[in-house]
Amino acid sequence: MLTQEIDFAIHLGIEKIVLDLPDLQDCQNVDNLARILNRYLEDVHVVQKFIFKISIPGNDEEAEQVFSRFLRLKHLCNHNTSISSILDLQPDLPSEEILMRFWGESTFAIQVSSQTFILNNKDYPVLSKPHQAVIKQFMKTQCSVILRPHSMTDHVEDHLLYLTQYLFCNHDKLDREE
Image (tube, rainbow, N blue to C red; front, side, top):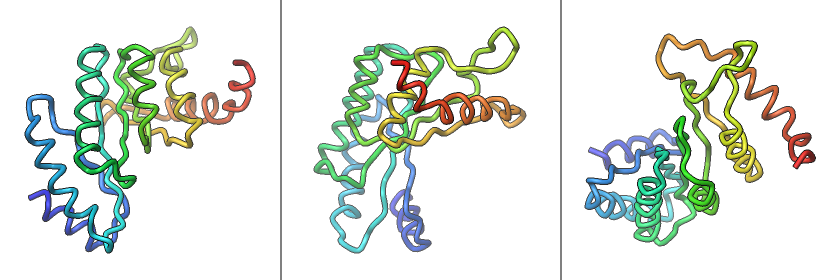
């Protein structure tokens, strides 16, 4: 089924294909996925990028296991530059050390759920200081930021306003403050 979907995406000329990293229990699926991807990565006519959505748990041990699984996939694919990641940040973050290990890898985007935001004194959604620090760090590598509504009824206008006005417009100013 996956090969049919990838073949169809290639046929349509889709440049970036987003896949979920298999669960911890599916360790053998990482090996099978790498075997399938190598078929495409070794073909000189295929120019698609494969981007893996990785949910980063707040627990350091689980986050380390997720990182190891992603590294195993990259290793089995010969660290091909056509493989990168979207890091899905949860409300609870692992230690900075774990997050910086992901920073060393090719990261296409950071994804933040509207559920991750907290309300400030004026009832506007803002990100916690640790989340702000992580996003600022990844923005230095030209990483995109994806805002994901928690539910279909979520109104994310204020969340987007915060991201564009505070994080993006003040990015240079924030760097000078450090």
